[in-house]
Picture 1: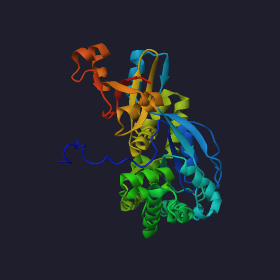
Picture 2 (picture 1 turned 90 degrees about the vertical axis):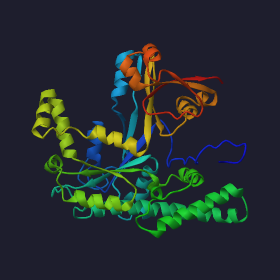
Picture 3 (picture 1 turned 120 degrees about the horizontal axis):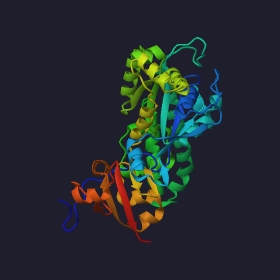
Picture 4 (picture 1 turned 90 degrees about the horizontal axis):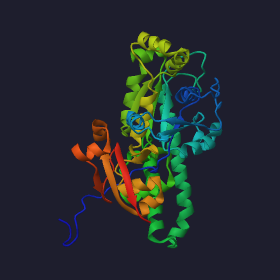
Length: 397
C-alpha cells in the first residue's frame, strides 16, 4: 500500500536506453574487408565501391530499406489508398574500424562519430576464408576481431566521459547548474569507472536507474547501442550451417552478458540470389531449391534490428492513406500520437483502437464493431500502444 490518499501506480517504469523516434538508423560496423559494403549492397540493392583494400568506404553510404510487413500489405490491399507509406529503415555503411581507432588510427575518430549517429549496430564478422581478400589483422579470427571493435567503442566512451567530467568538475564544485548538473557529473563518473573496471563492460550491460538513463541518452554512448552480430560465412558453410567459428562466437557473445542476437549469413549467397532474381523468378527458384530451400536472410536481419531496439509498429489506415508508424515498446498513446505530430500529443483527447488481427478476420471496421471480441475501443492517456494496433487519434489544440 502507498501513502494514504495517494494512488498506488506500481513500480517505477524504467525508460529504455536510446532515442525514441519514428526514423530508425542502423550502422554496419566491422573491421575492413569483412564484407560490410558488400552486405550493404545486397541489403539495399545499390552499387557502391566494395574493393579489396582498407578504408574503401570513407564517408558513410546511406540507403533507405523498406521494412517487410504482411500486415501493411493487407491494409493497402483492403483500403486501396491514394498513398502508401511503409516503415523504412535507414542503413549506414560505416568504414572499417581498426585497432587503435579510439586514438585516431585509420581515420578512427571520423568513423566513430558515424557510429554515434546511429541507433543500433549490425556488427559484421568475417567467418570465411579467401586468400584473395586480405585481412587487416593478417588472419581470420572473428572472436579476436569482435573484441577489437568492442574495445575501441569502450575506449571511446571512456574518453568521452573523461572529457565531460573534466570540463564539468570546476562548475559543479562551485554549485553552478545545481542538483541536476551535479547528478549528471556523478553519473558520468560512474559510467567511466564502470567501463574502466572490466574490458567486457558495455554501458548497455549495466542496470541503470531511470534518472541515470535520462543522462546516458543525452550523451549517446557507443556501447549503449544494441548489437546484432552478422557472421559472414562462405556459401557452403552457410547452407550447411557448419563453421568452426560459430560455437566460439556464441561463447564470446554470451560471456559479454548483453543477450545479443547472432545471425549466420553469407553475403556471397545473397549476391547469388540477387543475380538469379535479375535472371527471372524461375532462376531464383532453382537456386533456392538447389541449396536446400535457403532463402534470403535480409528480411530477418531487418526485423532483428527492430527487435533489438525494442521497436513496434502501429497503423493509421483509410482511403486516403495507409501508414506504418514506428515507436518504442511501452509507449503510451499520447506519445505515440506525438510521433505523427506534436499537436496530436499536446492536444490528445483519446485514441480509437482496433486490433489488426480482428480487422483481418472481419474485413472492415463496421463488422469489427459489431462482431469483434474487443471491437473498436476508446483508450485514454494511460493506454500502452501494442504492436499492430490500428489507431485513430482525437485531439484538440
